[in-house]
Length: 140
Image (tube, rainbow, N blue to C red; front, top):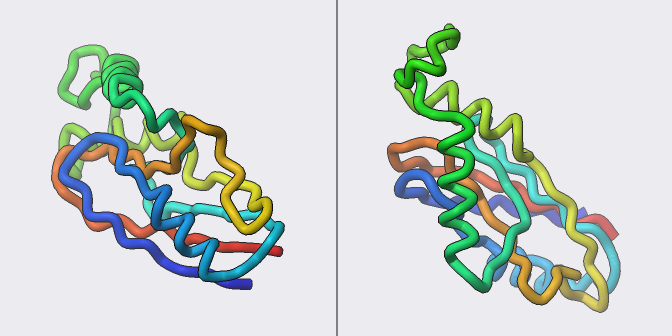
């Protein structure tokens, strides 16, 4: 089964679209029908399918998660024990637990079967830049 590793350099919190890279991998594999699995190899970021037409959707999603899970130094997060890696680390782990580290996308007629307004994203939850790895696995 074909696999490839995507490296995504992030600049801080946000959604980084990787749809085109995933589509290129699927096209190069020449598989007509199958399932693409995207798996992020980290515990403080996630992968998801989200709207790729209106950037306000991504802005609002980021704002919602920040409101739901504020930094560790926020008084509402006083109960957190894991604080060794900074004020955004444990909240990033919580955000990852609420989202996903893998997603499956059907492949039909040699293409990702995404909807018209859907894109594949790495969702960075940490404040500082990171080099993230997303493993793509195509099963036929």
